Length: 308
Image (cartoon, rainbow, N blue to C red):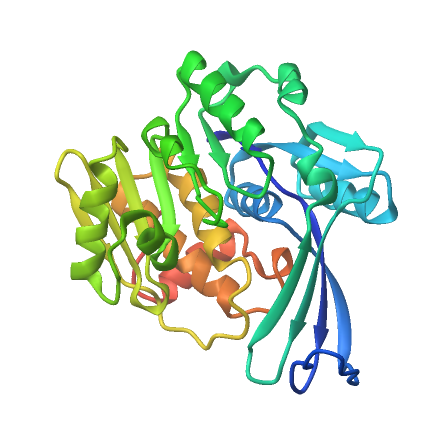
């Protein structure tokens, strides 16, 4: 069983369905609103836990009702919340409006996510963990401190440079495994990606920076793995009817970390993560659509492959 530390964001996603997105100054009728636990850090922690890993979550929550609810949900998942800091402000909120064609607009208020500081990391013993999952929805000073502490402790960091805006390229060489989608890979490599061949070019550019391993996810096309040993693995995506792509990338990352750092072979881990992401796309919401290990293995069995 992998012992994983996730340091990242925790948000309450407030999702309103509309027929069409409003234009500036327009008031429209909503078709329904839902409240969903989200945030890239919490999503990845949930995915890793549901795939059998022992998970500790670190980050900031507010003193409001949303913070209380998100804290409870993490504990209900069996996630250790001892490193979650409660800050005297609002919890992170994502205001999401989605139209009938699946297009959306999002306003992200980071709140307590940006109040979590490098000082809060002092309560964590990094040597306890097999791997650390890190993203870019918290303060850059925290990410800097995490990379320094992880390097000193000899613990690998899986970096997910999302959102890519504001991501520091200097962090790349200090990460063991980089997992990113094609948009993020384009932004960091300067290579436009439409297929596996172009993804390989981008991957080589990223490996040259000093990363040992890179995975570029390509949506319905699947994913590409590359490393400095010259290994290259193209993993196709599983065909499913897409309902909501929210948290699919986070599910892939959490599931991959749980399986790969839990002792599963690399190829099987990639197939497992792809299956977990496919199941997430098949459901609505963020954490509510993330599958448990038994569901993923049953899906793989139906698809004619197994990681057991």
